[in-house]
Image (cartoon, rainbow, N blue to C red; front, side, top):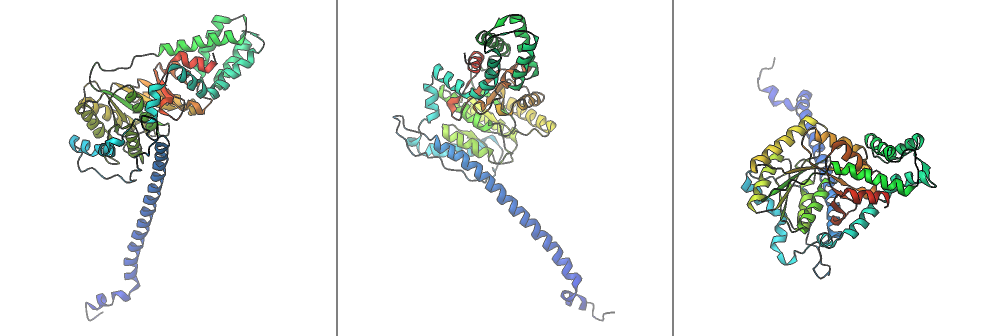
Length: 428
């Protein structure tokens, strides 16, 4: 036995077990710290890349003087890290949100209407029809091009021909049910006849317009006061960009517009919306990354009413991996908006990407199960041969197609008209 009870402690440093007790936890702590540091660095780099893309887009379509002389855009890339709000109250959030437009407010002389807004104001129906036809070129090749080959020198509408027509429609992503309906319409109107392609085009156009007519519903604009629209959709479909384009279009119509960044989960979602706010010179209500989306939406409604806005567009998270979680979140947001403004949101629009084809159908179905979708916005029609999915969406869900996008500019997003779409699709 040791004579001195403190001798062990005095010589502890010489015992291997002591070093293991100290070195083990220290090593584990160091490894965890390194992993966290690498994760933070990677996330910040990814966020910065996203912001640079948005910033380059903003610089490309920078504001110009009313006489047409270009000026240097005053928009600067925001910081990649968001500062937490000190409070979630309406007053503190509104004060925080004004930072999105503080640059514009401090340099009023440099605030000019953007190219996109000016182009929207000047755009007439004919120029839009031209954009639409150009944007639908790949879809038209798959849809009308494939069908036209069946009637090069005329053909009889019999069972064999109807089956071949159905195959072309299905391949053009019209969908099974909508293809069945179009083929049935051709059978009823043209069965047994020998017809040429122009007459078939006319009949298909009429049938397609009939499908779109069934889904027409007027937008639920309130008779007075703030119009609140909730935007939903999965990540990657162009949701934030669509919100920016909608803001430009509403502003071009003379409305006072406000945006609300209730997608507080996706990296850089708030910053991207702020860039669109500065680009269109509209205020953005926001909180810090990870804040309660319902609280942000509630503050957005209060701010929109207090500032006398005409339109409030609320962005939401695009998660769909857990329907119960999504349902709970959207339900909470809707409840919060309703408490802030009875009857709101007046509309809930889902954004879908035309390049996903029938995947868009699955997205609309999934969101329709968790919230009342009142409109569909279809983007990226210019980059796909799958634009025929619009017909399937309208036929299956009877939800109005509110807007379609056929290009990068805000002027390339416009209210949907079934007749214009079918004429562009069939080259009539």
